[in-house]
Length: 587
Image (cartoon, rainbow, N blue to C red; front, side, top):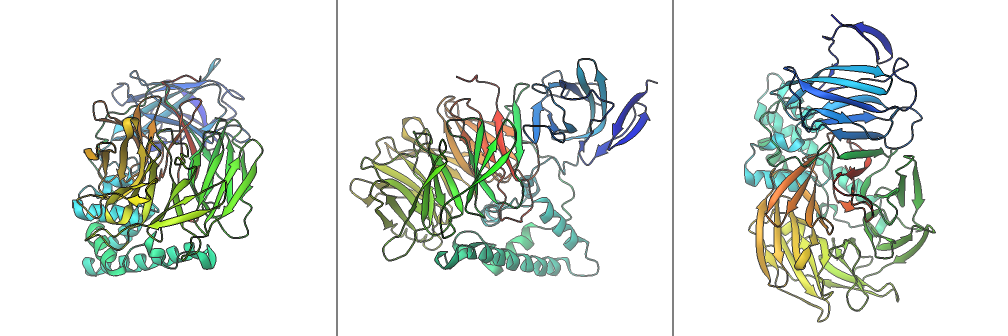
């Protein structure tokens, strides 16, 4: 039998091909002194135990100490099971993930022209560790699933690994009534989540919203406790039969680069401007943006010059390549010139209510800030159920309370916003009541709202596509709504392949003429093609890949986002992410 020499976790071994290096559901092999020194080409193939090639497996290689660039790079296998990392790598900790498979054997082969890995995988019924959080609530009733995603997945995935571990502890309690144990245990967790929400909003000072439950919390104590007790029962150590429900769109040309951001932080959104070499991140736990150098991986902080906490929240570029930053607190709108790194800051006050609670800024189909014909920038005001405008030339601002929708009062939460191509109609969502609508910026009048069938449908973020077709992410319902803003009619409401995926943000791709859907609960990005109404899925290479928004690099066409679990000390990865789909070339 042929013998192979390599080092695993720093210890020299000599083993046969039957060596087992299974770690959970992914193999991890560290490069060592016995592998070629310095950066080398890294390639290999992934096979099942019968020797058949496995395509579209995610192969991830971490960064070695002192190596520049991304913290981790992921590529996908081709139809022959072959993979090749771009350029030369001196990385470590090769892992392989494929839904429904477990890594059994990974053999590195140092060679004169680089390093090759042979990876053997076995089909596995239990998908725990590779299936996303959404897979665990597939059997929950549609009504409960909507409320569960709406209530819990605004901050973190449900059920995230730590939530599953908690559910298992409840399940394992001996000698007690399981229903009573679940009720009491989840009651404590909801109280804790509400405490964390109040603590988090308390950072904003006296001008922060008093009722933090209007934005993020564990929800009303008793109803949420009852919901969790119904939905979260069992040990949560096994899950099976999960499928993406749409073709995987990644191939051997797709490359995902992840950049770790040092903790503590609560990074929320990521975007590139005119320079694809820098990813800008909003840290909602501090008065700062973070700049990630994609060539070196270096992270640098830029503080927003403000005496009061602003806590940058939403990032939108403009056509000049400047970056607009909507705050979480205190109405402090800011703009950064990335070339000079100079700030312009506007503390805003809404007559009668104090600082407005800005959430999203209005942008057009190209995802650039789009003022109305009068030069005013529009925003949603999440706490006081209003829309507002701001004039950057004069500093003036004004808000307009949104009229009540009969039968849908309470918890309205104006959230996403987009501007139509005529620059006269601004569109908004009301997350908490299942409504979206428009406002005429010339007449300063609200127009007829669109009331969705379910209050918990969760219209969150929106974007304008070609022909002024408005796309709305229905977070709770796990659907996509398409609305013709010119004809004022619904084009269609489309079920996402995973109805528990938590679609959070949308971006229209003006180059590919498709829509990208960032999800919070399924470790995946969806692509929707309006020409044939089809979905494709791009799986992400790790658990806890919570997305809130997705941008497209203007130069390369790469997808740009970040893993954005809140609050600051919640678990889950904290990374900027850049995805080269491999289908376009730089201009």
